[in-house]
Length: 293
Image (cartoon, rainbow, N blue to C red):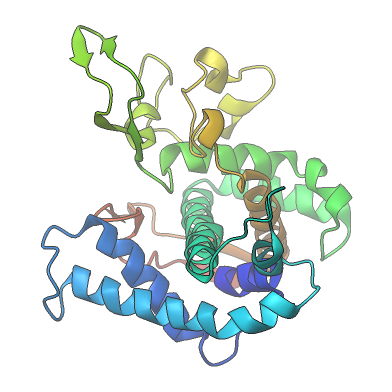
């Protein structure tokens, strides 16, 4: 579903029967990023990733000629027509690479955030009911843009879900100058990882860090303000994710409609296993019990 939405928004394109193969291609390509054996051995992650990458490249290259000549306002068309003051434009390879990354980032991470929200709201029925009443108060099934700020409870719950399960668990960076950090010398050009999945559980910043507590982001508490990078699911600085507002819109639009139609739960003793071998996803598919309301 999130892939369908991203395709509509950023490409002006409605997926047909190719949706399942594209979704699998995205998953296989992302998971190849953490492959240990990086040789094209059939059946292993790297081989699946290479195959997935070919599927994605073929899909976007097929659409390129039409986007090069179109006057539409979607991002795919905009990339095809973008140029510098000197007339330099993106090559076909540039456009395809940008679109593959954009479409991955625009749907995969949102899916993880929604999955995490569904889990914690199943474990915390009082919060689920609070958000349901908030959505009911709008008295409309489909949100409009001006409704987004009114769903304050979903904002709090979403921020807490992003803290507890950061969709991008580590951020690769390279040092631009020599630096010393806590007694360690790190020379310029060193490859390092900043790890939100660790930082978001540091007890010096987050009281009772294992607990689902959306109120920690309320105006009265704002525990995320204790340090500029205590909460960083979207990164920070010059490379902060440009999709954070789109993610907020998408999560609210989806969760609002589900809250109006269903209650959901998990067994009291259920703990969601998380597969962190790539981006963190429910290892068991997150089975929930849905009740129509």
